[in-house]
Length: 89
Image (cartoon, rainbow, N blue to C red; front, side, top):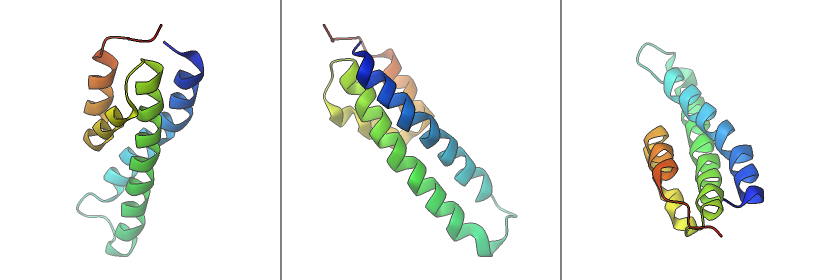
């Protein structure tokens, strides 16, 4: 695994997951309708950060950055990428 890409993946990926979870919990039924737009933006920001983080993680494993599209599956995508074989030399 390429360490510099792995470090960058953590830098972007962890806040991305946290923002996705925060946005999802905040937008559950029963939340104030005025703040639902804010939580949607939080989820979008989390998805973008997770995309960047998973792109770096895929590159750390010697894979193409397009594997970051698994970010749209949130935590499931992270699990899929973690199970991939490391091709980095």
